[in-house]
Image (tube, rainbow, N blue to C red; front, side, top):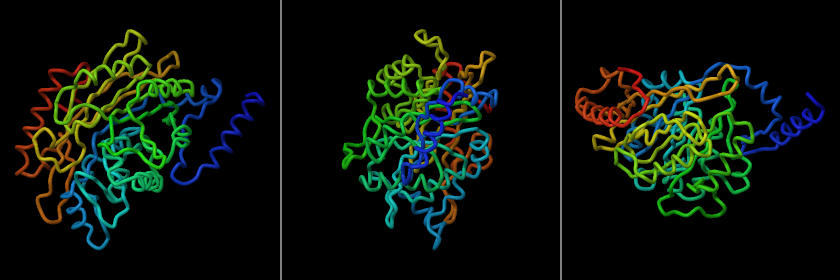
Amino acid sequence: MTVKQLLLIFALFLSGCGATGADNRTGADSLPEDSLAATRQGAREITLLFAGDAMQHQAQLDQARIRGGAKGYDYSQCFDLIAPTVKEADYAVVNLEVPLGGGPVYRGYPCFSAPDSFAEALRDAGFDLFLTSNNHCLDSGMKAARRTLTALDSIGVDHIGTYNDSVSRERLTPFIRDIKGFRIAFLNYTYGTNGIEPRDGMEVAMIDRPRMAREIEAAKRAGAEIVVVTVHWGVEYVLTQNSNQESLAQFLLNQGTDLVIGSHPHVIQPMQVVENDSTGKKSLVVYSLGNFISNMKTADTRGGALVRVVIERGDDGKARFREADYDTFLSAKPTGKHDNYRVIPSWMTDSIPAGQREHWSIFNRGAERIFNQYNKNVPRKHK
């Protein structure tokens, strides 16, 4: 390594030591190519896992409060059955569709505010990256939106999508994580914020094609081997994607994106492995993962999908998307005073309360119908 390269690494180290508070994270850390090569001597493959909308309706808040008693809001039961699957992945991503408002009063729909213990439970279940750019991120105002960033930092998880100000966004975007020697960039955007405009400098990453293109290119320049774009888009409760989603997905693929992962409709939508003629790459598009946990009541909103993605390093030393599969689960409601909402995977249907097995059957049949009809080369993991 040359003296110039050593000085560059030392300067990056010093600049990282200066970060404090809610922005104590690193974005793109560009290094010379021979330094990047040193990070590529790790695993031959890694797995990424993606889950959909983690929500907190009023009934969920009430139940967590009953379980927690004097200790506060208890979510310890919510993810115990799905946690082993989440933890199997090398890096797991979830859409946090609630601000962490700090209390003492928390709220459900339409303007959400949830306790920190909800995010802590998701972390303890194995989620590493929390997406915060969604239509509910400003529900409780700018102070709560900023507090969400501080709270996520305090529990030691990665997060992208909203930022304290434009300076923070420029510094922290693109977000690149080294996962066992694979440099993976993650970007997060939303179609809107329910008519609440960001104020006082607050930054929300919005769907803006020119800026998205610039940030994807910045990720590649900074040494990202795989680019993941997570998008909050589509029409609520519609089980198939629309032309706007298809157009944006194609645009992102044309910029060199490897994975496009969608949320917002609160129901599942198709997943497709596509060959991109403009880049020559095989990529994955997931239009919607549906709800991860919620109190929604219609059959299609009672569950969702997990998508597992395998990234491999070829004999040529290059990282590439190899394959993906999915599975489904039920967001079960409590059956007793001290029970809680619970994510129950499809391979543990014996754990579904008897009174909710018909709900599971209706949801799963509907999801299978959509996936069997429209999925392309994304099979179900558990048969």
